[in-house]
Length: 255
Picture (cartoon, rainbow, N blue to C red):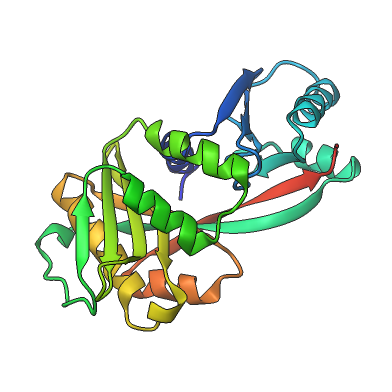
């Protein structure tokens, strides 16, 4: 994958998953969300820089110290090697590596989906039922997360496709989210309740999002998956996704 295409996918993922707070600083963007995820609580490179690295990193560490979370930098193929070397020398350790996967959606809009083991309900925007189910599936209990994450989903500036999986009692036992942007659909929030797994539901959610995304004009889809999550990677490869590049995070406690 070319650096230009990687830059596109990175931009799309920034649009798709806003942080609670953000600051732009000399070609970097500082993201903060009470450490809900690494992606929404890190420094990302978004453009050329002019200031010295030592000055910039020290500034970021002070900002995250005031925010009360670890100082985290996202490393991608777009990151200058000098930054990662500087962070390593400063004591930052690698943490939370993710693979970025892409699929071409040619012909996907016309494919017939296999029948799902449980009903799937489509929507056009994240609603409270979907969000409550996501919190339950992820076992989210942190009061800050429960308070700010709904606003983060509300702040998504792009068209959405939501999927809820309902069990026999009408409970939401699975979720999925597609974010449409510039000919891509990003695949997010694929979760299935533990007692409903191994029934093909995660695959059904992903295939539904891809088909719906293609029907709404997307030519490609992307997603991020934790590198060590082999079951999830096997699922996405089965659907047709291919790993294109990796990103990881360098973390240092600065509290």
